[in-house]
Each structure stands twice: as C-alpha cells, then as structure tokens.
Amino acid sequence: MPIIEITTLTHPGVEIFSIKATERVNAQINVTEAVISGVSVGTKASIKVKAASEDTLEGIVTAFNPVKNAQTGMYQINIEIDNFEGLLKDG
Image (cartoon, rainbow, N blue to C red; front, side):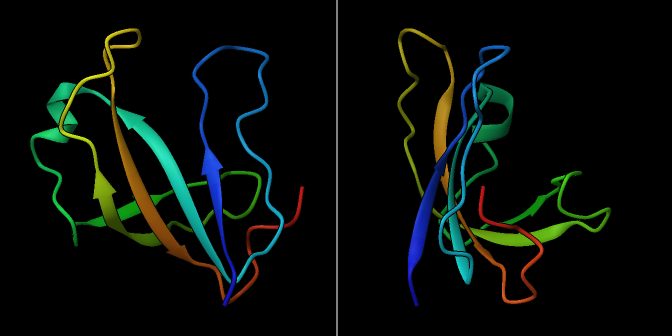
C-alpha cells in the first residue's frame, strides 16, 4: 500500500498539506515540549480533520525527534493514519 507524507506548517496562509494516495497517510506534525514528553513509538494518536469528517481519525506514532527544532521550538512526530474508509481525499 502506498504511504504518503503530510507535512504541517505553522504559518497562516500557507498550505498545510496535500494528499495523493489515501489508503494510509503518514503525517509529520510539530508538537510542544509538553506533548513530546508523553510520546513514544507506538503511542496512539487521535487526529481531527474537520474538512474530512466530524469523526476523529486514529493513528499511531511511528517516529519522533526528541530534539527541539532551534528555529520553531517544536518537536516533530510522525503519525501513520489508516484511511481505508477514504475520509481523507486527494487535494
């Protein structure tokens, strides 16, 4: 199954992500120090994408960087989201 990567950006007016293949989605998101302390590989994650559904999508942390980004002060985590129901659409 193809896996795509979604990279979130934190600047207003900048496209957050685009989706091409949708069976599984690999989201790269930035979190604060308060959140990273509770993150490990295998941690379950709940993701809400209002444009896709009112339902919460479930994912799992596949990787994380325990080192803070010097420019943003944030920590990057990767979450794999099953999207077999097709709630997340291309574009």
